[in-house]
Length: 450
Ligand code: PEP
Ligand code: MN
Image (tube, rainbow, N blue to C red; front, top):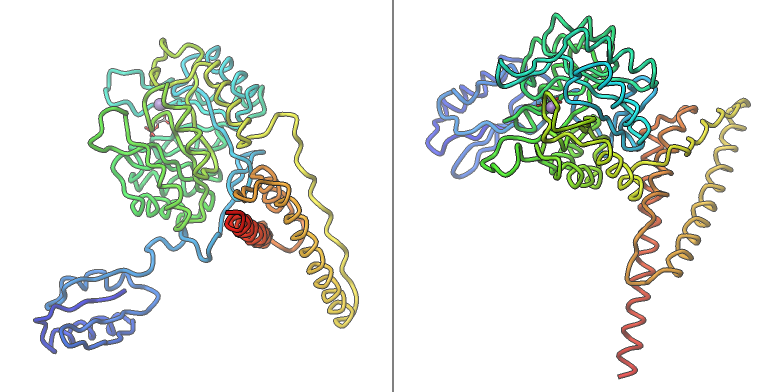
């Protein structure tokens, strides 16, 4: 934290600030300039001096470190993977599509939708049981009856299920019937609810509030993490702006912004983000392209008759078309694809010298293998147009996914992913260098020919 004093601040003012900092067990470092004095504050509990701005002579207080300790990344590229039943989301796992009706209206409507979205490749079934409606006269949801139907749909389809919890007193019932608890946009700052879901044994999907900044959103996530639940997923669902052409303004830049700040998985909800069926597909693809870990999409057997959010719900055909497009662009795989099995952990025994020799041997082989990989990457580059150095996204995705699943050894998925990230970057650098040299050679030949 940095305290900037006013140009008119007296030395008593400066000393007063310094004293307050030290009395709170923190350290103060003064930097006296010609015009102003600046004071650096260092220590683990900066909250203790959160009101330094009110002291005489203080102009501004600037926070340097993030106020959300658990949600923030500790090292570049750090990512968390959250498990929802049999499905994993985040850290290089495949884009997870969650789909289903806005509100559960009947057993028939839910089961029909569940079978459709499963067939089309969705991994998680959504369905609202308690609906936060703007008008008290609108359909409010079937409540616990709907939770039971969701649990039944999970039984028959094998898909984990997500539903929105609105009241702290319902968390127990949700824990019984649901695999992923949703905290809706309107409740993003319902702190009692955040603490309650923080005590749930299930992961939580936290939607961004209608008018919330990214910092407020991450602090809301911090409530859940601090209450003891490490499995939080963030969901961008559009924010209120002056624009009226869409229901909300879907802030896709939130994805790369969040990647710089947090390790938590990120989901895009293009249904609430746009409010219009025709816009859901394009914004879902854009969300996948910008690197979201998942999508949350409303689907209904007959959208015009839906009791809630019919305008933004996709029909079965429309959802199928979107899934085809996601598959064509290789954001999701075909149903027949199987995951690479987890490798066995090698047996490691011997004296310390033996072990070190084996490490040296491995390092030499690794260097040789990396050079061989570089040579192959170059060969691939030579078969391509030298003006482009595009790489095969699907294969990179597969590699990162294998890394994310190769957690049977002592290296964590984060560590393995860091290694493969570096390998891919180096490989692209080799190709780019070669591509540039080729383009230079071509233009020199062209100049000679003229
Ligand atoms: C929902 O997902 O059905 C919902 C009500 O979403 P939001 O909280 O984003 O409005
Ligand atoms: Mn809805």
